[in-house]
Image (tube, rainbow, N blue to C red; front, side, top):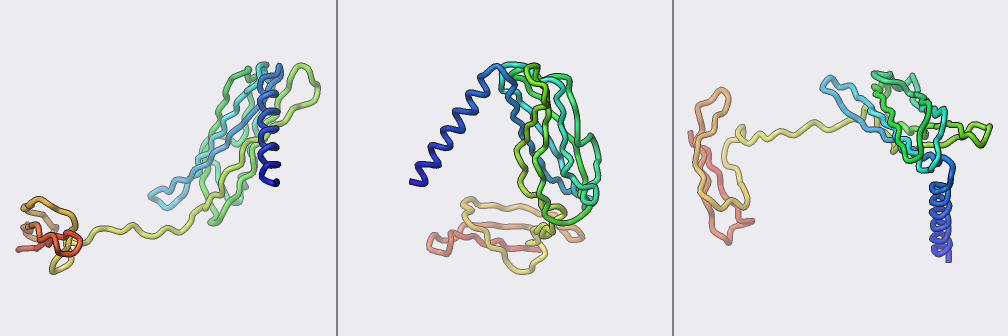
Length: 201
């Protein structure tokens, strides 16, 4: 019963949204997205983009965007601004705004939706819409070190699986003479169809 109620509620919301989108008024929908990029220096940048759509058939005027949830104690603005304004957004049109921040404080950050205000000719009051929220950002999170292949540093043998062709050739290792590598097929009944790699030299 509860599931059926939720389905009917979702359908009703979809019908209302479709009706508003097709009526002769602006219908503003905004999508906010943020992504993290770790720099070689260890700093972390946050790239934010906000897309504002007018799914209605008439024009929205004096469109203003404000995204002030980025605390100055946690982030520094690297490029762009967290707010912007446009003279109009026609029906079916799209506006895009982006900016970049740098994280200063380690921790999980929950960003609030951006706020969009606009005017329509038939109403004196300022209209308001909200963007979608963003997923939590784990700023300056600890990351495990990248693992590097160090097989050439290990004396003895290395096992490689599922090699079927005969391979032979030199491999250059820093501070050492070239090493000859041979790889030959072993019998089918041996574990995992493995092959043995011998180091000579």
